[in-house]
Image (tube, rainbow, N blue to C red):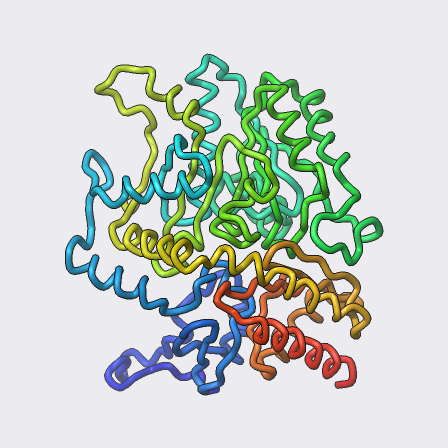
Length: 453
């Protein structure tokens, strides 16, 4: 593929820089990419078209954020109409009606109509906002000593300083140690391949790991702990599914000690597990919920925090003219994001796309587990419309085998996502059963080709 992106008139003799070199790409080995670029030209439905006109199936709904597929006509139309009517509205001291209506709809979808929604622009901002709410809430209640946050190993909570601090993926943290929040501790992760290898859905083993929260309470004292934050299903680290009873036990311990429980549902929100939110799937209600990604089907950046009404009411106890919470963003509740959010919710509900995801979940489960026994596959796990395939690492080169699968899968017409040596799958809800089966067969061919190549 031609790496030269320059167009006529884009660079003259005094400015010969190829624009491919101008962008510092996120979470990407820049030198490797720019030596062998893979460029996307367009997208429609469940497929991307690359610059060389190859069509590839979107195996992870972009980055977990386009479950309705690309260029959904309802969303395209809503954004086009909105930019002509109101392209920007100040988010401080003024509001626009659709933002309030979207907040109400999201709370109702979550089954908690009295919750309050604080809009932000990304999952990272949602996490940092939730942490600030938790700390401020305890301070408002006269428990200012509650400043400690408990995260979890292998967790991904975005790249804000708060999210990085409570996250538990080493490469995301190691360069930024001087900036980490003080007073953060971590629960152990729940993945034990010896005890749960090839589980379908929630593993039977591991609920006892939630009792580590009791140990941390004993170590630090409950009076110092503000909140514990977990992903109900850990997605970015490779689809780690919570053991049966684990989340219920976290809820029980948190309630016992007056600790807020935060669910990071940036990946699981809006139907990925076949219910609107993972809290409904697992039957465990947190105090705060973060969301982003699928709320607008990835079309316009947006995120938010769902807060239990009692938390909001605590902030409302001061003078009426006072700002209750000194926090927010210029683009909170941006009109284009709100329009995309309404259109996405319309599609989720009126097209019954969340129910469709639930109906496709067993198709994916049964298909992906047929890869057991294929070359270098050492584990498979799944829940809802998501799955992960764990690969045997190449000796001394962790991550290399998964990268090779990523590269070879493109030749099979598949765009997959890899983290370490895990291949994650989360196809769009609009996928057909045949497309999911074809995705798995393409991965089978990929694994076999790499084993003999």
